[in-house]
Image (cartoon, rainbow, N blue to C red):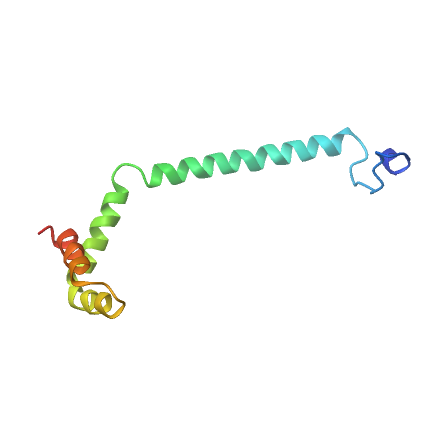
Length: 97
């Protein structure tokens, strides 16, 4: 039984914890370290994946898609309330006019 569960007083902790000795605390610390390491390496992999022009390639792919489907894009924009000036600005961005 956890010794903290037997203490009484204004700052006592009455819950029973599964950690009875230092090895449980060591295990929790090691687990936390592994999780933090996995997060750090995962973020590094994501940054490496999207660095070096990949975002430009995605933007160019989206631009090609919009250009190929411009009639539908223009109809949808007009239907959802975009004005002619806004549509013209998008057209300039897509086609580079």
